[in-house]
Image (tube, rainbow, N blue to C red; front, top):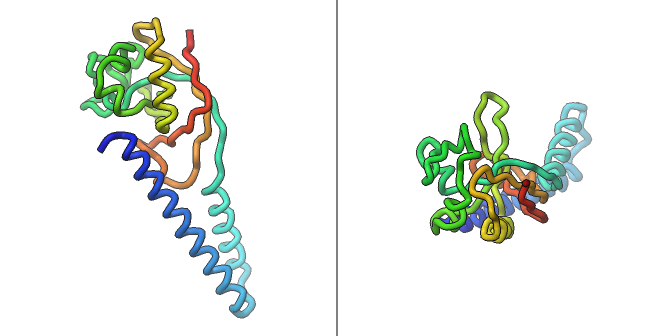
Length: 182
């Protein structure tokens, strides 16, 4: 399934989950209105905690992040070894613009930005991009004069609606701005 279709499917599942959760919360609230007063404060705390979680699920966060740009096709190769031979997990600076720009399967499968891992000396995906971000990425790499060591700064909105919005254990970023780092 092409990456854009995966992102759409993931987003649809996320929205459905949020709607179901919201509907269940409304049903619980309606049931509570008709129930006898609670004797136990723990029930009130639990409902309050659940309300807070529901609120958090629908929040958005605007972020900016600078890191190595990679294409998802190469990232998904065995050992994260790109078509151009770059070991993306350990030396993403070796990944070439040519690979991301000129190889059709790399262009078509979306992009992400890396961050250093918190557990070891490797890199992991910080954010994968939405379809608009993938288009902005192609516009940027199509005009780039760089050969490799391709670093960008992206700014956008990351949605926190639960695990269903995450792709490759990274949130999807709706990019509002992307710039090449010199």
